[in-house]
Amino acid sequence: MHHASPSPSSSSAAARPGTEEFPVDIVSDEEMALIDAALAAAAAGARPLLSAAARRAAVPLSCAAYPPAAGDIEDTPLPRRSRLARFRERRALAVTDITATEWCEKQMEFVLERGKPEKTVAMKVGLDRHAQLEQEVVERVDVAIRSAEELWAVKFMNFIVGTNQLMFEGMTREIPVIGVVEGSWMIGIIDEIQMPTVGIPLQPMLVDTKTRSTRTVPSEAQKRNGRLQLMCYKYLWDNLTAEKFPAENFFSYFDLDPNYLLSDDVKGYISSLGFDAKTFEDVLKYFKVTCHTLPRSQEQLLLRYELQEDHSLLEEYRFTYDARWFKDQIQEVLSFWIGSREPKFVAEEERWKCRFCKFVSDCPMIASIPRC
Picture 1 (cartoon, rainbow, N blue to C red):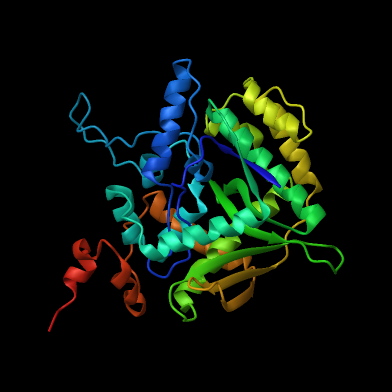
Picture 2 (cartoon, rainbow, N blue to C red):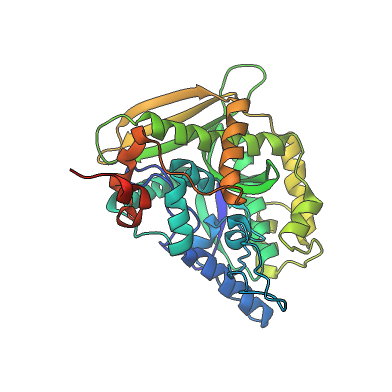
């Protein structure tokens, strides 16, 4: 299977969750800077090439997060903007934004305000493993893009190609999904989808593989975080197959032009897949038709934990989608993003997470704990 990625290729792809040291991640400043630079160059008439890191970005548009003004003409202070407006304006929340917030809201706040810390060795090993798994079934093809519309067009075509592979070959990996969850746009990349060979009707199973640096089974907190991640993917997938993609809302929210004329490079890539598209809206129509042909996913979801050293299987954790639990978790996370409350610290029984946090020396919770 061929997946397109903006060219030239690069090794600076965004990290994925899964290592016990810091099992959550968000879109990096570097990735968004690449996209911003491409769009700025496009506005000047150039045709820049984006790094492959851009293919994992939550959305192709980045709006700078400016602090509110000190006061208006009447010297009245303006209310503080929500984290969603400050850090994700005109952008979708990534599924990894959701899981990072669930892991520790205070850590998420530090990341937003100060930037992500350096990746650990375990993170880099986990990233390499996911790239290896992807290469087993996906061949990346470099495609030059020049606009936000073309970046989204490539994402939609990758979805079409990947789901075709799923239906004909029984398995695919790295499938982008997008939709609205509890009123907020969300995007993610499903690690793996498997189509069972028996059963009527045939329903795909969503799978996520996480790597561990030690030969230990994951804690309940790590499993809970993984459950939330896979339930996000299932919700997005099922909404797409139910034809609940709000196209007009999509165009307006992300400030996209449905009549945008695709470049020869992007049209050539699409043509090589057997499709004829001249505008961005043409691609979206193919995307929606593809969604119409896909079945709803299974209620059972699968988390696979493997050892980084030799890729041996540590545990397969199967669980059932829980719509009520998922809704409660999403609403709790979104209350942090919309600014209806201050960030919470981890529960006392999960303070072991702090040992792996790069912001622990600045955390007010740790500072408030009496020391003998």
